[in-house]
Length: 537
Ligand code: BGC
Ligand code: MG
Image 1 (tube, rainbow, N blue to C red):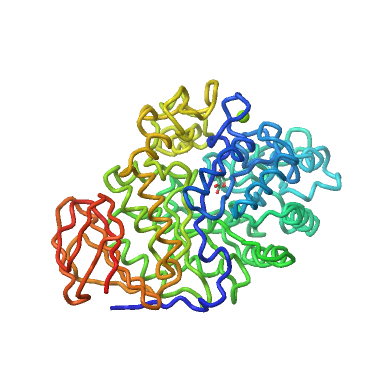
Image 2: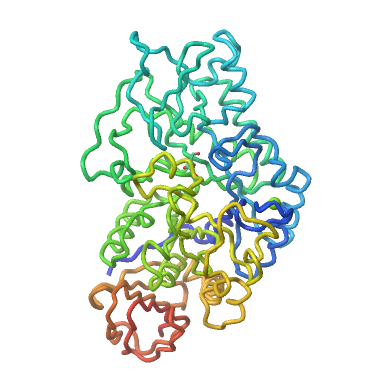
């Protein structure tokens, strides 16, 4: 039995024991009747989040934007999109959240701005403009073609021709998202000041977007073909982005940004990462720990729902965590199909049981606490540019971004008019109001689980020990702190499994079961897809 002991549990930072909750602001709550969520809507729903029990809210971008990538194309880093509200409303959101002991995390998009950002408008106005070098401009090849074979993450070339100034500019994502040139110190300073603008206002931290693309190799060499079966191939790429992602200077910028966070008290630095394997997460922690506090770990998000696979990923990660580094896990976000759809609805509560009982910070995605599933969007109705650009694949992100389901009224209580994306067909039964009224709903399951996590130090900072050999399709682990001794046992399979705990304990009581069963004693049977949290003697 291998045990992992969280280190330094005496002086934990607030974020180490927090449960994070991602809000996709366009889809959470509309207060203006335009079919799109907004800041007032979030304010109106803060009490729901308090009741759910989460501690910190990460809000996807709310800044002025032409919305080519639904906010990930920022045209002003220091303001609020009028569709979402204004700075005054934002300050009120901060106040209302802080009064309720909720932290607010914003999304920082450093790799690219919008092509409508005044910086880019200047940069493309002439070759000798002072901001020309704020973006990445290159000459065409002698035959007029693109400077090299680099491609956009969303399909098509990473280069767009500018007729007026007769050069190509580079974009890791859409042509509407030109990459900033982070090799230019003026860019670095301007972007650090954008962070300071919000941190000074009282924002509790940032989730940093797409950092892996931040620096491109200065040789501008062609990227090689992908290795069959590799991570990049899974994402529909034909080239391995060897010269376009995770360059060594990029990690240096993670550290430099971190210093900006350290100018303020108690802020959290969260970031997207590359995800080829768990060892790839380690450099994002910094050396030692001067990078991200929470380098998002997407390894489980991309893994099958299979007990030995999950067991392997957990062990690999805990084994190589840097001294003092704190783990984290993600199972859903605005870029990937909902796990209730990916793994089948029958498994969705077990996913929550795992995420909320592991040693490591959980980040929840809005609506998962209701058991929300993907909403099918036919190709012709897709609005996500990634889904539109790659019609042959299942890449569109609209299905996981549909409106939050609040109640059984028209449009699920999300809006009074036509919502920007369709509401799920099942909203009349799967919604917050209906689930609050049903003791055995998924929402009440989450509420109990989060409460248990908060009230049991064993669950948020206790030692973690794998309990192997209980049976096929099972994953089990102990969480222990002081005299608290908890066992989590998950049945990944579709068969009942007899459980015998006699070698571990003389008594076991159920604190929570995905099926709301109350097992007790040292032998019992787990139903198919059932997971339990037990208190042991
Ligand atoms: C974000 C995406 C976005 C992309 C470009 C990603 O990593 O999570 O939603 O489209 O960066 O900003
Ligand atoms: Mg609105």
